[in-house]
Length: 564
Image (cartoon, rainbow, N blue to C red; front, side):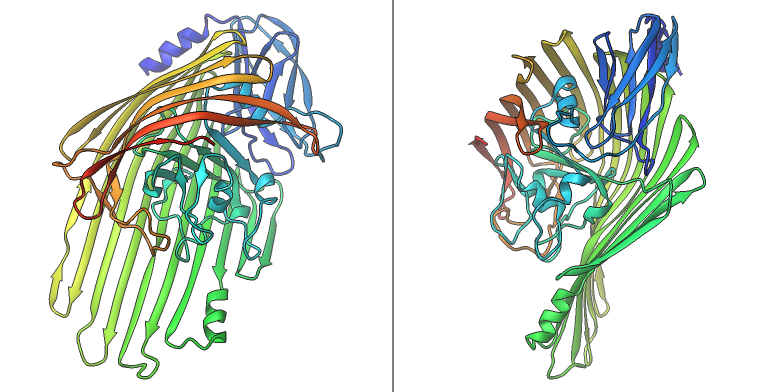
């Protein structure tokens, strides 16, 4: 309540303001990073991930509001601003084909002008469908492997090695759900159905204080909200899998459900006459959105992905039967709210579980079973305060409870050890354009506490952007990062069934890394499409990473210099 009163007081010092939400007129889904400007004033901004924008510090008068987004018709709408009041303009943009010979402002260009970030790449639905396919299937993580700064160890693995970091040092999120094992079929596919994804962001280092608990990078995947205008569905069959998606409106909201199941491994095993072995995997994704009122919206997202491997003795099918399953499950309930025109809030309650279950049934002996799980319960709050057109303040908190367990049963013998880790973090970050159209800074501080060893870890962050010209900027980033969960698997293994996660022991040194990144970002014209896009050349990236060996679990200092 005190914060609300404080920021309301801050808002009243501005002459006037304009806010609203930008959506797709065809589906009703929000348009992230759409460009919004008041023509003739020099004031402008971009929408956030939920399509919300705020323009403050507007002198009273009548203006023309211009909203543009690649692949959509530009909208121009008159708006009247009164002193001390906020004018709300919600907009819906109509899709249109991209015309050759015409220059349009893209979301990447808008982010280039408005945000002080480095090493950030974004893929949306339109880009995903154009990427190379393996067996007719687009894979999200394999698509990310094509981006600068990402390397692979083989053509058969989708593990991400980003600027010297190991795969377990990447934070992978789906609508706020932590995905601990983002691989199928020994690393060939990820558990995300591409047609259900609206946005993929890779922060390949120097990521802001909003994110933590990993050393290397953040891969943030967002599920589409679903069509709130009409019902639709589609299905497809490729060489590897069959999948389908259905979406449509509900009272005051929308829904989307997608599923995929492989059949190629089953067919190949039978075709080549491999007896006593069967394998398949499936993926389920979904999201339901409900608008409580124009300022508050609830969304419930879920993920279910599982690999199933069965084997037995073909000569004696009844002698023993074994089954190994592993995968990810999770759900996230999110409340996004416009508390006041200048305060945007995002409250998240999430559950995530990575599980494995191995069982063997013998005809003449007792059964054997071994079950493992890593379960995370999370409460997270993120707030953004729009102090001015070019000045935003972000703050929030993140509380988790991570439980790692193993249950082993052999006949009458049973043991079930379990370990618990509780991380708590608070953060504050500020993005401010100190010199108009010349210098932007993004200082931040994340303060983390981990229950193992009662560790307090300060994590300062700093990003700057110096505009060298209209289309060129010099970016820098500095930050400290820590990681309380690690894997026991070898990071150099080409094939692995799944990763085994454990908390760092209280008597061991916590993995930590410093990021020092600088580079030139340049927006240039692509002749084939006549669009503006952003490309980042990172001149160097030097990080001190602590990795754990499988044998003695001791930290090893590693330094890398990776040009991209």
